[in-house]
Length: 474
Image (cartoon, rainbow, N blue to C red; front, side):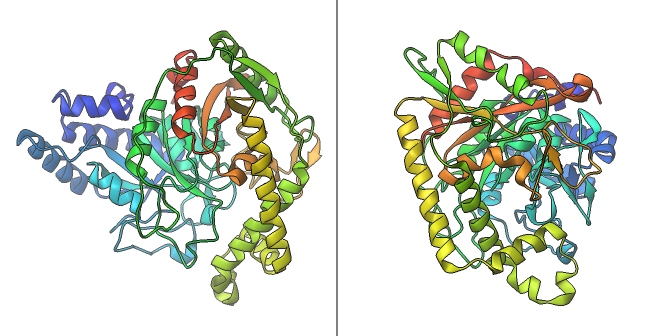
């Protein structure tokens, strides 16, 4: 079982198309592993019936025998994050309000993943409505970290990251507003990629224009797998007016000669960190230096407090707009978790002038980063300010001796790239923390629309480290 499930997406695709593995055998093995380990991890939810999935896999085998492949993901099992709709599969958004919702349509990225040949086996767990970077909800419960079942898998793509780490899936999709692809990647020793805003389209809700904070993205156990899934997800769709044209994903060998990388670390003491996190994340810097890059510690010449204020203003204002109808219904409001209520109530108090000012600060932050990229090839910083924390907590109340004043303040390190809409690949950097066994990771941030470049740099880093080969001892 471990030989099959240890294969990443690209390796599995090669084995299926080379007839070394049948789609039915792969599906059977994956379902066996899910049955063995998922009850302890709780990464995959709404799993479809085994007999239906095996029948779909046999259909894929017949198609291959007839010389037809649907695409590189032909017959490959995948589970979709429970914030994206997949036709005929329960989509709860982690909320009891939608515990029984079964959509009769696919999100755009799900359409594309299916078209590439994947078999959707179920969903991956997420926090309620995606709020917070700890994947628990009243519908399915807590997703636990495969490296330590007492710890959080992060979020909101925590189910996806945990499933990858536990070898329950070869690749996975996720989404990221405030680090939801990056924080769980670091917590689970896998790769996450937040692409440039607009690269991956999604079906808009009531607002298709103002909400430019979040994006969909891929996760995997290698940069190559992440790049292939990204290429499948990306490209223009007229239903999403912000979506960008398709662009080939090309991984190249970067030339480090005379190139510099900026290490932002704790932003000159602005951000608190759990003891040991900066040491583990900083261990990635000699890897870049050995490759030939010059690495400089950089303190942003920008008021990061203003960036945080702009972030919370825009996030709460958008949350209030999208969830106001639920809030105004007392019965439904009673089923929203406190953090969601806080976002909505904060957003309802935001005046129009603050929205404009927040956008102006966001613009100034982006323009400042353009000047930084005149000197630096990439920015590097931790992907989280803590190691995976106690899974029974809702969120860390204190980091590095400082009290956290909001449920998401402990992951402030991720908002800079989000606010600028920049491409970011999250890579593992090793293990530390309590028991010296918990994963940590970095963000490698690229230039605007520099998706290929930052993925290529991530691949170069991957080839010169061995963290991704280390699996949890389940």
